[in-house]
Image (cartoon, rainbow, N blue to C red; front, side, top):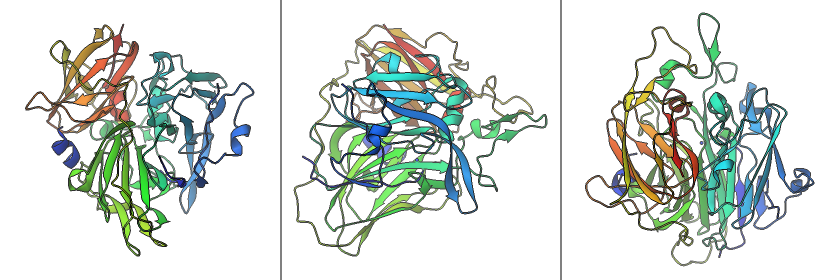
Length: 491
């Protein structure tokens, strides 16, 4: 059981095991606080709740201090980015009321959640977009414990809204968490700002503007050089006692950047990926590849007095050319040394997930991903600009489903990347196993998305056990807007 310790939310921005780890009633929802004792009440909860017990979050404009010379105009839940950390216990009902204070429609999607289809928040597929001034109630009991990433997801607006800051973290606490002294939530973001400290749009000779450029969208996507942790420029720095056990909960709130993160100064153990607990393991070379929206729980014991641990963002390791290695998290050891303790162990694995996926009778589908030549002279991405195609054609919102299966059917998908750009493919409403390409095995952890390296093939399998219409799309926002966003149906 977790020791009574501190919860740190520090404001700022986000193959085989061998291949993956080397290359590529109303619930109480607690808003984030800089530091809070485990189990402490948050006084602001009452002010943020409606009379019927719903936690109200407002999608609205705000400002964020990212550079010394100016405040950046952002969008955020409750006007802040990241939005409030929402927290409930497993078995409790989530009651969240979205109030739209924006000029355009929006919604909330809970990344990695295996909840009911009507609560997936993907407009117009699973709900109507929430109009300006309107509200929508998200009410369901999450089936799984873990860290989930919530963000805007309505129509053609979701990518820009999420990139401008409309995102946050939902934590569903397990009944018996792994033993630790401190929890650190680190939401990684990146920002591309102009000389005025603002988020620039793409402009054409005719004066039209769009948030994404064709050049970015047909390549790796929009990658900002300013890296933040919880909304402040990296690195995040904290001090803990030597030997203290830290539970680091990493969330990639980036739209396109692929992060290669290396741990220095400690022996790290991955205990959960994409919200699902896994048997603890030390990653190869103490490094993990993290795609947009991915979440990792990593546990470690602090080093000796006067030493420090670092999480280093490796420059260029996953395709960000020209960048140098830089630390984004630095935890220093100082104070009275903690007594030695048993080895790090994960929490119990999710009993709701079938350990074995029957592949013999699986529905099989290959998705060949290719680049489409951009229209001549096109500079800004518009709803009609298709830059990517699957099996010979772009995927459009009004298209029929990629496939339809009955509940309980096993499905295997092959992502065949025929481009020179890495992709991230993600699944809604379900979790998946990544298959080995050379045998009939799979990786011993669950994912909601996978990195598909350039000119490579990645195959996944999942049990289609959650009925409804579910999105299957690129996890890189610009790619999803430009042709890599389909859906499937479970009846």
